[in-house]
Length: 391
Image (cartoon, rainbow, N blue to C red; front, side):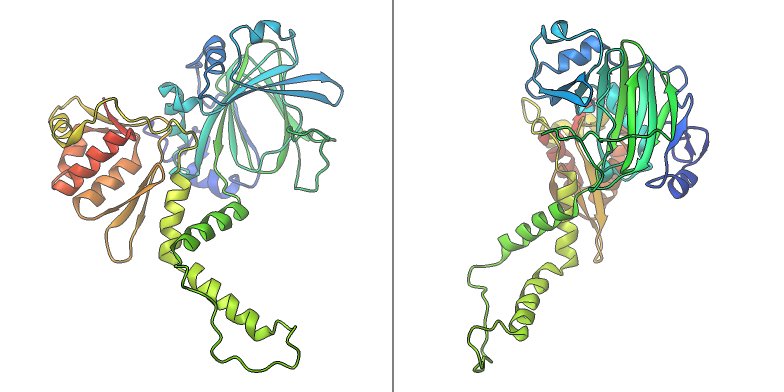
């Protein structure tokens, strides 16, 4: 992470001010946020990713007034030669899991908790290309990587905002611009959730980097946590009513019965420790099946120990891997890596914090933290799982 990233928000204000005045509240445009920025990936390389079966990609074509077509990858090598000269966009998700230089861009935004970071999507648009006026349900930073794009913003939206009748695209029926900017490489636009916006390429070879942030849906979290709790409840644990009394009408479900059921359910769900453990695993689960990617041969404790003695060695976080931790009331902490949880204490806890704080940990900084067998074993397991690798 750049030295000033912890305190300065791209040189225009403090991070604290950005979070208090703009984050999830209002948009912010920064001209030349990254001066001299050069895209670490070319249009041809982006198109090359879109033909890979493990990469999520889409093409959106504007075919007429209020008419849009969506195509899903993986695409063929000759797909893009058959597309029209204008009004189409290629979108490739999770480019940070494939291109280390793209993953490094995320370090600029690590004043946001690790678990909130989603991925970096890159779009390539032909002249006048875009995906129509729409809104997202999450925060996003839009970094112009190549060419020029016109961004316009509208009103705040919600589920009742009218959209076109399209099976897959969430394009707004009406859009009235309330402000806009012509973006060039290095310019950055922050958009809070639910703000209507429209981006249109001004000429060919327009590439935009979308650094998106996870916003877990409440319904999904309820389903997932409830399922986790339910899996631990034995089948013998059932409804009981030893104080049952005769009812005037046997067809009534009494308020007392409903209250008994409520207590049965809530006693099992209202467990802060279980909730914390579930949440850590839930929000660090990899977005893509190929992450993490284990090494071809297990590394093991001895090789990791030797690597730590190499002054030039570095522990690198696997592209797409997610690290987070929680302090525990009784001491120590839980480390969560790619959907797995590890109980850590002593040296292992200090190591876990260091691994969560950065994506690159020099061996010279890691070695003083690996002072017992538990810490060394933890490091070896994360390397063997592919969540870390030795550079």
